[in-house]
Length: 93
Image (cartoon, rainbow, N blue to C red; front, side, top):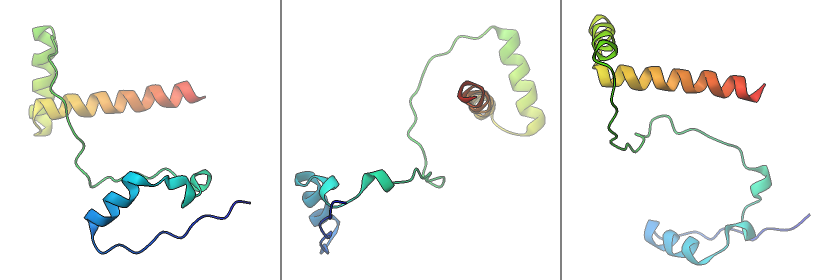
């Protein structure tokens, strides 16, 4: 079992940033024991795209969004995310 170095104490974030820019983190952290985490409170970065939809589909989305009292673009994102999760669940099985 390899012994890892002790992570030093830093005076501030800038000092820590400089340290990690130069150092190999695998000398300090056993990445094999790392666990995946989700930072649900962080706002994800977004990218603007152009999407062409038939008018009737957009009208139906807007109607559903209006009933749910949410912006239609937010509803589209919700629908896409739900579907992606379904697809990922099925592809793992």
